[in-house]
Image 1 (cartoon, rainbow over the protein chains, first blue to last red):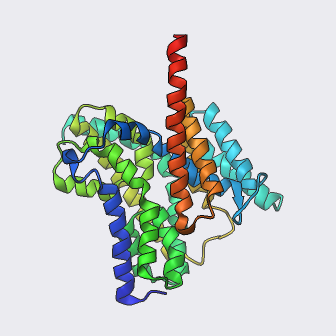
Image 2 (image 1 turned 180 degrees about the vertical axis):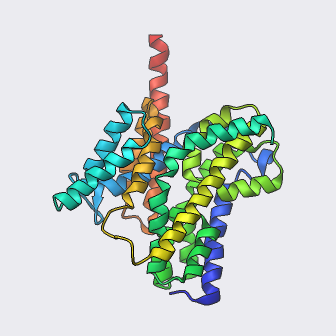
Image 3 (image 1 turned 120 degrees about the vertical axis):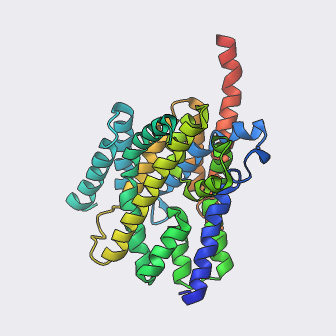
Length: 108
Length: 236
């Protein structure tokens, strides 16, 4: 493992990537503006990024494609609940409930 | 602190509150993970405060654990954080008329959840005091929650049940953010293409499959918008 001073230097550099990326357009302010074309493209960024973070977790098992697995079924429940109910807590309760039931109850 | 700031703060906080619950297990899991590779409690909390980005923290831990070269660790963190360039560009108008120190603070605090839930209403609102309240209050709340429950994980590492799949709460939180966004067809196309792209390209080195998936999703959404627009015009 990285030790002592090197570890803290590493952590500071990792932290600098957080500030640099998050501040890339916020810090320069009015002086930096994306062209309108880029803005139209970027409207799709959050949805694409969230899906790209979610999909590997619910479609893969140990790095291999697995179309029927407990996480995917729990995700289906979360989608169904989110589309039908405005209650913000239900997706967490039912999603985890389904996953734990299958993992612990059925030993999947 | 004027009334406009308070109104913005109230709206932002209550809109973000349910989602912040999904952060709790993620913070705990991150705290446990940092201790599990051999960081001391001080080092773990140092990382949590300095980096303040769950994906970059969890993604670099295996590299730190194996003593990977520093450039590889930092490059991996940069790639995992690249999506924030996109968020930053989209959010920049929210901070029009704000002094530099507030911009710096906001850059440190900007996270996925606040962006996903609040960016639309932040960009629409004409009052900069309202926007500042609506951004900074949920963001500080999110920071405090993240630090507090990471500390729970750091101090409780070893006592926590590791077989409860608690990390899945983070995925549920991401889904709760995503689903309302996909109400229009181009957005849905962007999400499906981005998700499948990330899955199919997972073999790319340095987690670049994630970035490639995001780019594919953006282009697919844009293409869907382009192709559906003339038809909509013709039918109306």
